[in-house]
Length: 118
Image (cartoon, rainbow, N blue to C red):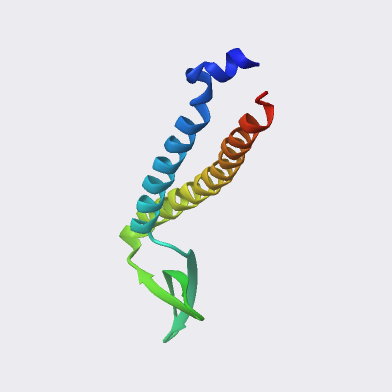
């Protein structure tokens, strides 16, 4: 056990991983802030006997829902950005859980060093 504690390469792995996770979390949060949020809503309205279809993006700002119409040419692009945002948000949650776990490991190893000394 003392050999492992002396080996700084093994002891520094959780700290390096923690640093990497924090950097990854920062970059993901910056990327998410630039992407649109909400969901795509497709609606049909009948006006003067003709059916008109339009697409909008709906999201929450505080207690209100805000809807913004999207031109037909941009629907695919916005949909892809929303999928990317969902992917990044899942990765953010994984990084946050990993950071909590690594902090527990690092803190327990600090406490453990003092209790095993003779």
